[in-house]
Image (tube, rainbow, N blue to C red):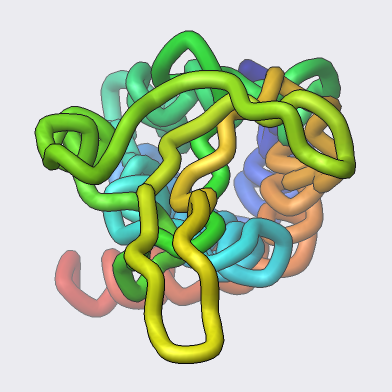
Length: 206
């Protein structure tokens, strides 16, 4: 978690306001903070789509906003806990988090539109009589994964076909820069959102 303060902007604006406008400042500030937080959320989601390889809607929609009020001028843009647990290495570095004992790398198995294997696919495949899970000695070395026994066809001998390869966790090389994206958006948008919110609040007060 990180903090971006806009107190300096608010103090500068407050000095230039008359008494009526100053009374509207807490409400206008809350509106401006919330508008900025929403822009930060959209920017973080767009950045995810650029940095990560076809992130799922669950991952993109894990960015959420806790809104500010005029009595609590703090908004929070955060990643929901489940997604945060596997996105953290793409922010701070380290090994990617595995959903099981190994990273499942599709080889010949069908994937969904996001390049991911369907849920419980290994279990369903391993239940088939011509499929097994285990290690096989290949020319490239021992390979652990889900294998399919293929039938002999015209011009092709029977053999083994690797469907899913089991790999260890590896270093997450992409960086989301969640902090940097948020700071840049706040710096470029908050003052404009505050001016708009004050003007709107003044129009409603008159």
